[in-house]
Image (cartoon, rainbow over all chains, first blue to last red; front, side, top):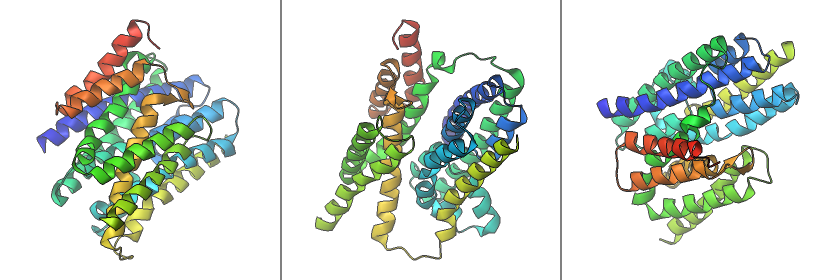
Length: 219
Length: 104
């Protein structure tokens, strides 16, 4: 439990700082304080929020903003399937509350655990903490304006991919089938990124599963 | 302002619907072990693609060298089984230092 909290705390801190910048950007762009704050509570998905607000502030209109955010969040359906055993069997409240906590980072933390008990603990500890950190950060940023300046200067944009590297690497190291599927999928995603809307590259990465399925079928 | 509220609600409801797919199907649809195995492999593939695009690109373009170099440093540390905190801070500090030195 202690290592889980220690590792999660770093992600909470980083997310809180990014939340501050989200709140500050939204308010600096002319949105009232309650918009980023409410959005973070009910949408709770960093990349989709940044994109939706970005489209809105660029004058793209609310329909385009919602569509962009939704496209980015389609992946949460796949993630919710991957952690369904953790949140699915535990009564209605846990199911409905748990669904809202499905994010990239929390799913990565959950899947990095091997036994079911630790998985469940990882999901709830990381998920609830991340929800608190993100929303606290956004509120602080929205109230304070742009107090922290540019988060790129701290290298925070490199921290989030690195979090995923650390959490995904054990699975990649262990299973050659998953490794090949992941490398192929990542290559597909990178190749199509300049040409397709945000959110689509990651979905197309699932094509990598084709080699995984075939390997299993012939094994 | 009502259009902004409608946008937020649409995004919130749609996102929540995506997130409910797993918990709602759980226990109702009996999945073959093979399908279940592919689903957790799929999540890893998605996370790997997220980290690759997150490391390399920004708004559809190349993100500049500072970020991917930082992530690679994090990856090497992770490969050598460094603690999680070292991996993440190693990546962030590398990128921050490269930026301070003038790299993109």
